Length: 163
Image (cartoon, rainbow, N blue to C red; front, side, top):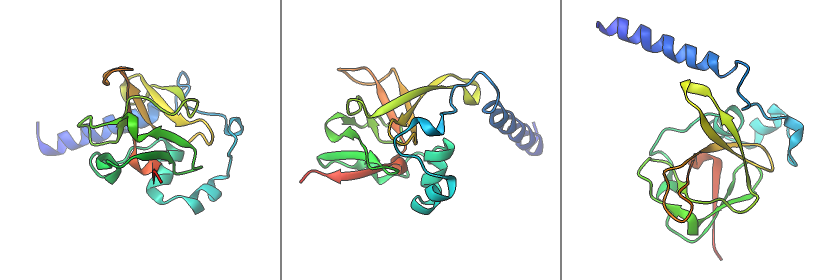
């Protein structure tokens, strides 16, 4: 296959995947008034960086290996960058080798989940229960005691070191 054909077919698949995100059958769309913290798109853009807005408000994904929080070793809490809700404790953090901060359990009552059927697969999307910000996904290949791997975009988190 020639390079041009490969690029065209790759672009076509990306376009189809993007289109599929908007089709009925995916419950990824969250009701804006279902959260304690609600803001207009302009208000979110004023308090978040472009990358934070892309991940939290547009269900984007940061590039693997780009977050310094993946290597964070101190004791503390990982909170939502959008509303400061504590989401994960450093005691549940582990190195998954994926390039994103990973945890085996969230803080009790901190997250919500929805079914994500984008990119021709079904995954469980994780969002902040207070502001609805997209955090990442949860998978069933984590360590004991839960067997879960919460694969979280570092840009969606703010680390607060223990006092």
